[in-house]
Image (cartoon, rainbow, N blue to C red; front, side):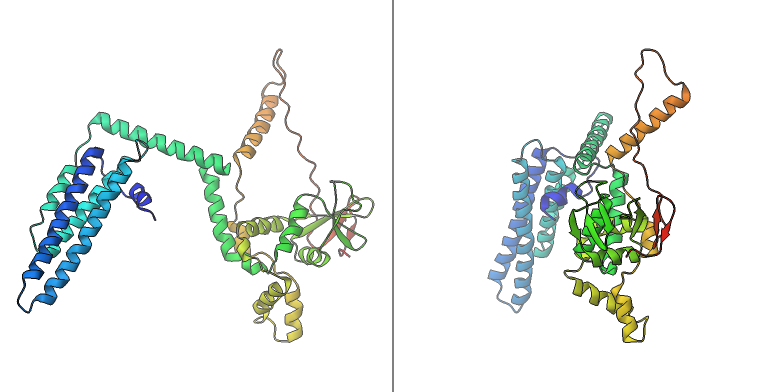
Length: 369
């Protein structure tokens, strides 16, 4: 962590000294530390006894502390040149560290610890007005940081915490999927609503609802994801089967996006990882290979702990819909008031039982192919 970052993260006293005071104290501490180191070196040079080794160790210890004290004094001056945007806590932190090293240098050299008196100059009691100003500044800084985080992520703090928790889940579980980036691409196409199965092939439709042509999608990966219940299907009137992520598949896709490092570089590497995992459950080699060719389901603990984050835009849209519904329930139309128009919710297909196909006429097909 940089010195600047350390300064802003260190706990600070209720009252912060002025920048000029911090600079003076830091420089004075550095002078006292260097003086102590010089005294230790002088004592070593004048020594004619058998204590030379001890005095040399004392000199090196005092010199090390003096170097640190000077470094923090220099940092304080650099921070002061940063202008009014530099937090006062950075200067205070540097001054306190310079004093600490000066005290250690004097202690190592065996001289009086006069540098400790400098700490009093860095302490003072805030007035009621200063307390209020400090609290106001703290709240303003927190509001500015929150605004920056919201602008960068599009989420409030609660949902950013959800993302962090989900990322932890992803780091624990994604490698257990036995997936490659190809599996993620199949699910992403399904998420877009354009993945369909027809005539024994999986394709990505050029446009939603046009189930003909389009780019080919991996047949093997699609079948494996469907067999493991990461995909569900709805059968259209013309026999086309439209594939979408199941609830488990959507969670797994979100986790894989959060931790792409857990995906395998090739299908062979993914297969070998799955094979190593099933060896303990199957004795016969053929049974092991058969199990490894399939994809394991998402761990139940990950499904229970996962919480989908909601963006600020999604929260606003939901609030508008709820407001429109409440307005209609509480009074309906009023003259000279424009009637709010709630957003039309997309028609949701009836979810099918994983591992089966359902048509618009409730007919069920046992397999995908």
